[in-house]
Every structure is written in structure tokens, then in C-alpha cells.
Image 1 (cartoon, rainbow, N blue to C red):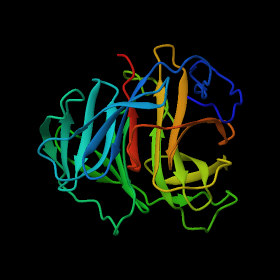
Image 2 (image 1 turned 180 degrees about the vertical axis):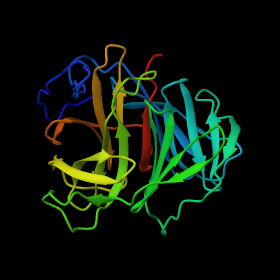
Image 3 (image 1 turned 120 degrees about the vertical axis):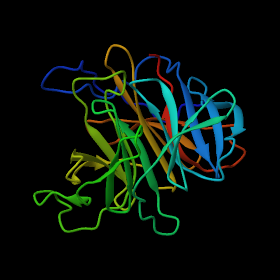
Length: 269
């Protein structure tokens, strides 16, 4: 793949008081699963930024989003009927786990966020400023605080436009985690400093031209190192969790022009 930009991001191991930051070293020998269209999955070799296989998800008309469940290694999806399904990443076959007992209001083509809190083993499910927390075994939904910028933040009073999100330390069941979002209006990395309350604090601009949809995830390895990944348009990027800026960029090939709207990384368990 052709490297377009390069910057080093600092790496820190998880401690009781701090979280690991994005690690942009190594050959990125990971497999990612991306979602495009209504229900098409793409298996991506991250080392070459190339789609190696594509398949439709069976028995599902439309998926709202996907994510790896770190505690179990399952690939989980949410359907437009608010069913939570396990997806076989090799075949696309699905198994229904539960159905949410409360629907998420979704306006038109608004982005929907599906991402696991690895510490709580609960699903964060958001759209617009609505912020839900879901127990996927029972389908029970807790309505959390609406998304809003902290009163001390430079964007206080502005309407957030959160279109993607991910948790750090998404490997097994960690002792600590942090939630990061992408805001499409200011084209920046945001920290959701209190995920349940919905409080937002800007970290920094991505430094790229915004191109919807955005797909964002944080891959964590067994040593607790986090690498933040972003797909925007036809580009695959790594992002510094310290500054918010894009660190490395590659052309993503093999999607046949389909827009990637969600992505997750199948890290080893």
C-alpha cells in the first residue's frame, strides 16, 4: 500500500491512572471487518489495506452497525429491527441473541453508533444526541444522558454531530477504558468523558478533509496497546488519541466503490 503521511504517536501501557495511547508502530498485521451498504461485510487485511473477501450477512435486510464483543470475541451486529445478532465472520450467518426493549430514534440517514464498553460488557448505542446502553443478553435498554459538550469545552453550546465512536482497551475485560468519538461538523476527535452522562470534550482536529460516512474503531492488543483507526471516504487512517490528528493514511482497495460505514478489528483473544 502507498503511505501518504507518517507521524509517530506515543505509546503508553495501561496503568491504574492512565490509559494506553495510540500505537502506530509495527506492520499492523490485523484483520478488520467493515460494513457497507445494507448488509455487506468486507474482510480487510490491514497490513495491505486491501479487502480479501466480501459477503452479505444472511437473514438481515439492514444492519445499523457492528462491533467485536471483547469479552467473548463474538462479532455482533444490530439490525434495523433492533435485534442483536451474532455474525459468523467466515460465512455471514447470523444467530439472534435478543431484541432491544426500547427503540433508538434515528433521523433519516443519521449515523448510528454500535460499540462495546469492554469493562462493563455493555453495548453503547447512539444516534444524534440520543445515548443508550444495552445489555445484549436480555435486550434491556438504559436511556443515558443526551450528548452535549462540557460547559468548560471550547465547543460548549454547540450542537454535537457524533457519527462514530470506540472504546480503548477493548481486549478481554479490562480494568479501565475510555470512550472516543468522531464529530463530523468540526472533523475532530472527541472524548466522551462520561459515557453514561453524554459529556463531550474536544481533543483535536483530524487534519483531513471530512468525507462521510466515517467508520472508527480502536484495536487493542494483548499488551494493552491501542491503535485508533478511521475510514473516511476511500482512505484508511490511524489517529492519535493524544492530539486527535491523523498519523498515517493509506488508500483502501477492494470495496468496489462501496462506502464503509462501520468497522471493527478482530483482535486475538
